[in-house]
Length: 403
Image 1 (cartoon, rainbow, N blue to C red):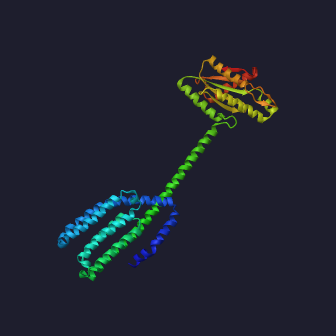
Image 2: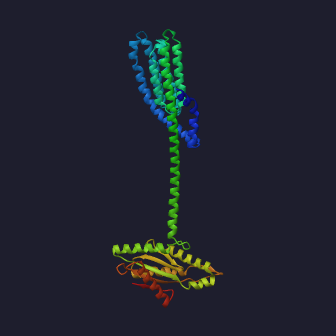
């Protein structure tokens, strides 16, 4: 008993302090969420307990008629009034405002139910009455309904215990010191046990709720970090495929597409064209006007081609002033018409330097890629490179196709 009293009067405040220190300093939003969650649990329990408890409360009228037949009508009226109050409490649980303060409703129900039993004790044998056992059941109903707020259980439990004490003192005819001590000790020990269990359960429940809130917060942060990482990875993946200067496919990614295109045409027994071209006399442009101007020329050529090629065509930068284009299968005359259109369009590009436009032209080498004739990407590119070299050796600004 000494140890229980120490726990009761010394740990009530410290456990909450320890709990708060371990779980951190919860914000008002978290505390409000905890209150809402607990209110829902208590509401669910109260609805079950009020139905079951009112039936049990009225069923004891059957015992009243045998023990105290002279008070039968009086006790039936009293029990009916108590059950009516309990049923009203049950209906009140469906009101939103009551749900927010449901723990107070439990206090009222316990005090009302306990008051009825104390009235029977007062009207019958006082200390000698065994109706304190009914109060014992009321206590445990209180614990079943509210296992979260021990202060409320202390309030309601002590209120019922005080009513029992007054009921016994109000009936001196049934005074029995031994029975009074036994009944009062049983009720007091039960109340104390419920207080301590509620304290422990409520503290652990709150700690678990706080840990769960932390986990949810961490999961949210993790989800946000994953989203950021996914976005960064997507950007990094896109940047790894795009040439910084021209904003078209870089050499590595273009060769990947070229390899897939070869595999696809081999599977469907078809063909396509690979075009390789570079800007004529580009070294002279760099040497005359500087590398910054040369970059402008490269970017302008890439942009012009990228804006004018068909959706199924792909353009990439091989390096320096050399570009690559994949064009889907077409008849030879149609293919030459498209390439000639690209060549003439490039000649119309205006990149001013020192007050005048610098003429730009390209030499184009192309190869018809029939997968049955080529083993891999390197052999295809080598053939296109040979076509480009042939143009440079003969007459720049022309188109040469290897079939």
